[in-house]
Figure 1 (cartoon, rainbow, N blue to C red):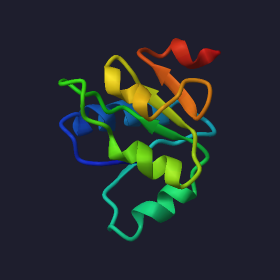
Figure 2: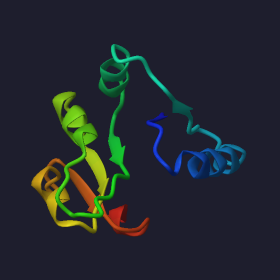
Figure 3: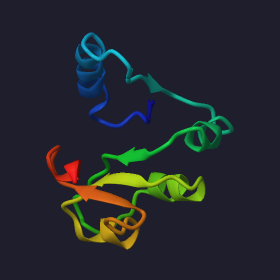
Length: 104
């Protein structure tokens, strides 16, 4: 489940459609949730993924805080300094910059 309405929403909708036609046991979908439903969805997950990227390097993605409040580990896109203030690699999640780095 992917939430949000960021500038890359359509790009990911196309990627999900392609991948969903091939994947057998996993399906990716997008949703706009009501405010009361968002924490319920987060709490029902096994892991969170944050693709947020900060151009300034200073802002922190609050979605990671939401994941941690539900006890989820987080796979977070790195490449900017402040992400390490929330996600501690190999402790409460993993930080990656491309698809090959989270394999270990």
